[in-house]
Image 1 (tube, rainbow, N blue to C red):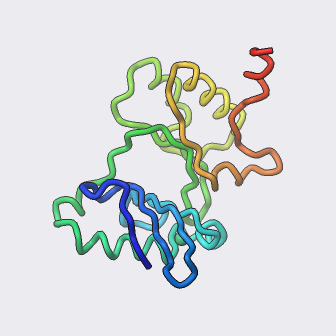
Image 2: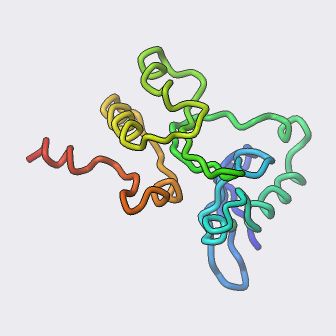
Length: 164
Ligand SMILES: [Zn+2]
């Protein structure tokens, strides 16, 4: 396998892992050493719900050699808003947000922080409001899929109506 980092100075960043034999590439977002911390776009990651896969393990293994202990012990610093699935005993829908968000945003996202999100419609209105305020919220593909047949997606219909 071949590993390509989006930012070589950082451990907790995005990587492209390419299997040389098959030619297939997957996107890996390294966010920590524990299962469930990181994300991979491969089908196995989505299916096995273990919170890890061979691509994540490979990226962690390579990074372990490249970064010193201080970097390895520094936790991931959340920079962007993101909706992701956290795999573990239960698969949970979670919202990630940077530590330093201002008062209004903080109160907007508070109901969704540090817990499994049950009410998707509430989260969708929250995301809509965040985007209205000019914030970009990343929704990871697996988080998008989990709520099929009513997939978690941007509320495009409402904005179309407003435009027309
Ligand atoms: Zn993978």
